Image 1 (spheres, rainbow, N blue to C red):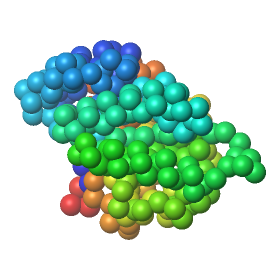
Image 2 (cartoon, rainbow, N blue to C red):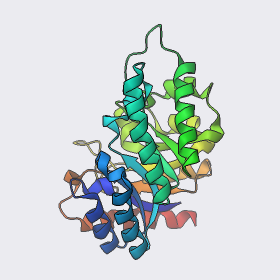
Image 3 (cartoon, rainbow, N blue to C red):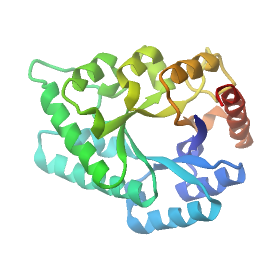
Image 4 (cartoon, helix red, strand yellow):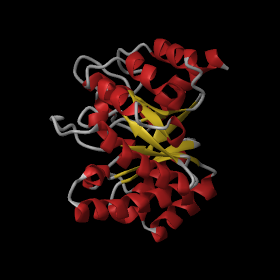
Length: 265
């Protein structure tokens, strides 16, 4: 396992400037959050790529301003889903251009399933999206998100009946698991060998998201659980800008996590 940082942790700083800041902290692995649709355009991605190459930073995954289009990928209204698919494909191409291995994907909002909902039909759409990502050089990494259908362990289980595990991966988000009132172990039991990315954060009595090391989470237990499932990929620190007063605190949190990882080397 190794530590990275999401550029979203520095929001609302412009994405290209977050790379400079994280480089100054000595961060070598990042998840790039494309905060606007225009940031998936080729010219902007070239600007990012030039910075990444200059600093020698590895992009583990890309994320996107997903609420603006990802839920509509599953719309029955074809013009709407086609528009969403254009933006989705742009993000997939950005993933490939930036050298990322994964596209962190939220998917549909947490709507109440009714008698007409079909897990099979939903999974067919998901599979077509996953194949577009693969054609662009990476994996769609489906993230558990409390306000999306992926926040439910049962929903993921039902979809897995129809999905080919070779087509995609999963991103496990610790804070979102807490917000969904689902256990990390239950998520991992579904994700298992498909787990390719983990978003880490801490919590306390006042907030479900604080910097790792500043809260109550037992990270030794989390790392032990991941190790038990042979997870050997990235732990991406993802918090919000109101979780710290100074950006140097992010570096302190990275150091905290890296210190814990020495037990698994």
